[in-house]
Image (tube, rainbow, N blue to C red):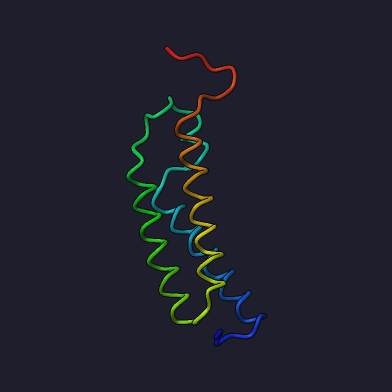
Length: 99
């Protein structure tokens, strides 16, 4: 049973999304920097650390709010942020030639 009204869940989920984005922004290099470098050059441990930290924060927020919606929205945000950095790390910019 959710302890929050739907409008309050939306606020809590938005807070969770903002927290995840800020954690990834603080712990990892920008996506543009990852994309412009050679593929697989950046160490992915920063993104993994950001994902674990974000998961702990989102889990805490969801438990305090007693809302599975906050956990699901936060989890999807973590997956998207991690995938975005992994994709940027393992692809070559169009037109760039490897040396």
